[in-house]
Image (cartoon, rainbow, N blue to C red):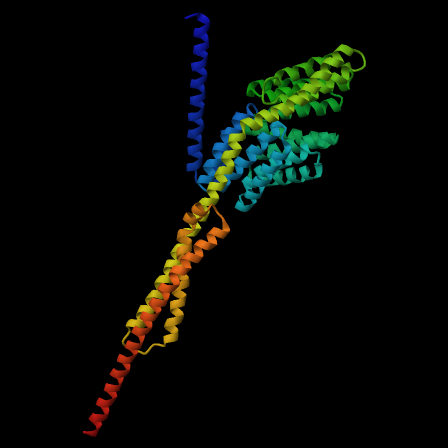
Length: 466
């Protein structure tokens, strides 16, 4: 076997081994999450679970959150379910699929509100605020970020508070409100340093670079951009590196240093090529097109094509991702259907128990009245209880046979109705016979009671005469 084949084989086994060990690690962490009883600790464990994948591999991150979602639904854990939905919403946002992202984040926020858990509500609010920021609905985004920051402060959860401040800094930067942008970005940076949480530090440094650039502090701006790139390399996040390069390219373009702008725009494109973040090449491609439009026709054409292809790539990426995620979404639908079926089955079992209890009470009452030797019973009461027993038996058979009839009739209403009529046609004659028998028994019992009472009366009268 050639050396080249040996290297390929070794690489294959190494990749397979890595994949298996990664799956084992994820499954172990999911088990720990499921076993954790404290809600807030469980939320922290979930955030830790995805801390390495959320900014580096959104497809893998979504697969992990899919497992978490299925596990949480199985365990009826609304806390973990809301977290999984919110995280999936963030992943869709990374793909550029805003509608899907909003859909999942709205579901997550609604579920979080139902639980009443403040930490969970804060998490879901932040991700939903990201959506409104991307949609340029800045008032809604600011409102949600502010609310999340206030809640995080009360909870003394400074990581969540830093996320909210990061979002506020970026919104105010988009609004060109530099003073507010600087204030919140600095607060975000301070909290990152205090908590030693560096997962989002690359974004914060990039924002500070853009802010300093708008303030005219060139050396500070470039220094922050360089630090942001280093953080992106540390976290192995193509997204963070791309955004830092793109922000630096935009800064140089704004100060008319187009040679430097071109360098960093190209780096921004290169770092996300052949990754799940390829849609992030659109802005730097557009920037390069603008730079070359008037002075270099060949390059303008090249980056015009790249910009067009980047847009096409975004569509293609979405198509590919939708294909890759088709199984995931189908499993979600199937899981939802299974959950609904399980709920319906549980409800049906409860209803059967209630009907059996009611039937037992009515049957006991009829037997008591028929067999009692102490008092005369009205025939109409027995008739009423008999009709009631008939209705209860019919309902019991309906509940018991309903799943079977659904399968046999293929959920056809007309056939279901005919089946119920046939059951009723069998029950009614039986009811008449039972009613006739019980009435005869009742008459016989009443006669015996009356005869016994008459004998007692005669004996008393005879005793008095003597």
